[in-house]
Length: 612
Image 1: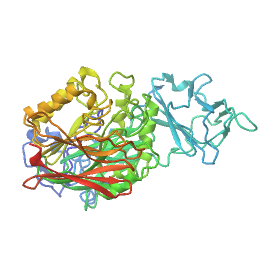
Image 2 (image 1 turned 90 degrees about the vertical axis):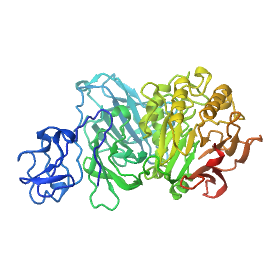
Image 3 (image 1 turned 120 degrees about the vertical axis):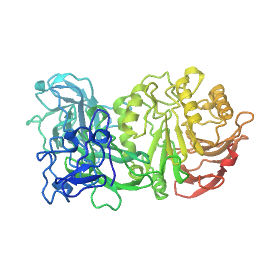
Image 4 (image 1 turned 60 degrees about the horizontal axis):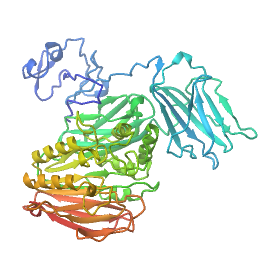
């Protein structure tokens, strides 16, 4: 296996220094006086003498150590490689501060029929006066059997001042029955207990309850397990993979990974999810091989949690390829059966291109609630465990219906979006957003942010993102270039589409013509119907196919009738698959429209020669 060097989440700076076990020497090393040493000059690849020629104290394995990864005792630098691997350094737990900055409260409502509440006002108190409302705006919390999470930031409460764990109830005309309560101080699990009490205003119902034992852990977590969400496969390149998980607290998380067929799958990355990111983490592994299948799983504090899954890396960049991708938008209903059919098709990639939830809120806790909700949908979370899943947004998972770059809360929306999608990037260093470019073989995907700058510079993208897109398109040598926008591209779109910015649309089309950029196909969603369109390009250029995939799980809207519309369906939930073959003399792209029962309705084959 060849997984080195490794990259880790921002904030974990590591230096990985290769070393070799005695007697059994890997490629590129030779045995010298009972030690494996590199056959190349130290300074060129490994560092100083201490890094490459350890003394007896640095490595002293017995016979078993040379053949068993688990038996190798790490040296002071915590490096314990086997024959082919360089083991990552575990940075250890962060230092938890004495003054609480981020308080995380997790509450599970009871499972009985009437345990939930819509009106009972509840709070959690750590002192007589330091109480925190248990209410997530824009969310129906305290539903039967469900977990709710409340994050209070910039608290500034000394831990030494905490003298109680108290639940208070007011306006309790609608009884609430608790099941479990957990607290994390800056991520540290300081309290977990099964609290089965009835809160309200009648009979034996309580207005207040204080745990007589104070802070303590009678359980590990109120979630089903410490791996609360995920795993999810995010951005994959020919030599790297970014994976996602959410834990219940700041815990030691190890990512195991190996090529399918290898007996051992060592830990290739360590991470400690932070309270500031809602305990999400996105470990990045580098040094993988192109077009290779890998299996992976996570361990939390030494115990495997969640499923063991697999993914395949794409071919080398620029390589002619065949690939299958699927995409869709508008996921609102609690039941989302369509994802089981998407998974059955085994696409290489799946793209969410907007309205991935319907939070319609700028609130931090509410946005996180909706992203957790999305991963909890049956079939949806399972798809993402094996299929590389990437996303951009539209208005409903931004800050609200038909919102633009002037609306408050967009920084919070982008923060949470970045926590929950393992995309390769979020804008650029100087221009934040959800835009990025991603490649598979000789196909490029340009994910666009149609909200953060909408209305700026009389455009939908804003000047900086527009310049970025032009630069990336001009530099691309891909056979097909797919541009993904949550909003429709057509000039026949609504007032909440590219049609509102005709000058910006015309300028982009003219740029594509003037720069002789071939192979552009447009993807969109939003409109609660699925369409195939052929949009007129700039004079002297080619026309642009537009594939509109909507909704994945929502109601339908009526089909229109205009000269660009080739196909329209509006009586079900839909997704579109795109099968691309760039190995043929005239490369092709075939789009197939599917309904929520997994039935194909129509298809459209687009030849590369028509996009020149």
